[in-house]
Image 1: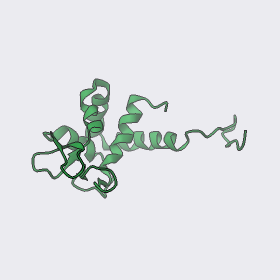
Image 2: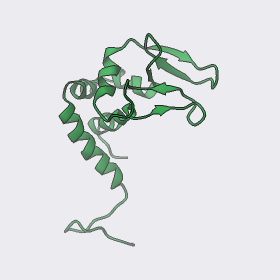
Image 3: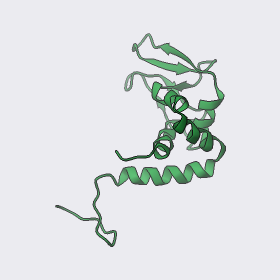
Image 4: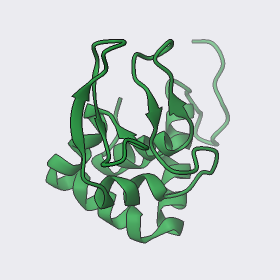
Length: 128
């Protein structure tokens, strides 16, 4: 989709908002202690917890839980730690909330604009 590693990590940080419901996704739980608050907490939690992979009996899907099972990560989230370039951005965003907000806004704007064509003045071109 044309996103850089940095933009990808910024967008995945939105997992910190909301939670998974087994009825809809097959996974269960929340990524952060306060899933109603947009912040850089996702990155802090990802780096700061010890994660254990388990299979949910209800759905057969695997996911990661922290020690007290109050928080989760998905396999895709854990890849952010395994890949060196991704991990670099996880660490930056865990330390710098304002940088995360700025980078997320830019990446989300790019996501919203996928497929939109503009002319040389920046006006949206409609049709062919």
